[in-house]
Figure 1: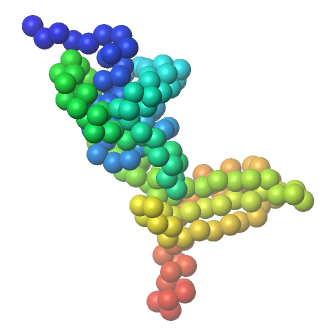
Figure 2 (figure 1 turned 45 degrees about the horizontal axis):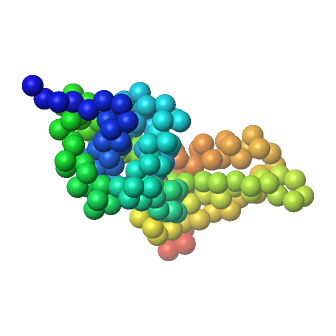
Length: 176
C-alpha cells in the first residue's frame, strides 16, 4: 500500500507539482488559484509554504513584465522526483486537468496586461500592454476621467486587445 504524504510535506509537494505540471510560467495569482481550486489550500498557507520552498531553494521567484512568477529550481525538481508519488494519483490528475483547461486563459492573462495610476490633476492613467514572452508588442497609455472608467477599460482590454492590435498594425503598415 502506498505511503501518502500529509500536512506540510504534502502542501510543499503539491506546490512543486503545480509548478512542474504547468509547463509555463504562472503568475503568483494563477499559482495560488490552481493551489486553491485543486487542493483547497488557503491564501495564508499558500504564502507560508511557497515562502519556505523559496527559502529552501526549491523555487525561485522572478519578476516578469506580466507579474512575479515562481519557477522550480533544479533542487526543486529533485525534491519533487523523490516525493511526487506521495501525492494521490487523483490529486495529480486533477492538477493536470485544471492546468490544461485553464492554459488558454492563463496565457491570455500574461499576454494582455494592464495597470493604472492616479493623475495629479485628477483622472486616471491606464497603461495597456500586449506582450509576447518578455517582449512588448504594443503599449497604450490612455487618460480617463474616473476610476470606474479605468476599471472598465482594463476589463475590456482582455477581449478587445487583439482587434485593436490588428487595426493599429494594419493602419500603420498601410494594409487597411
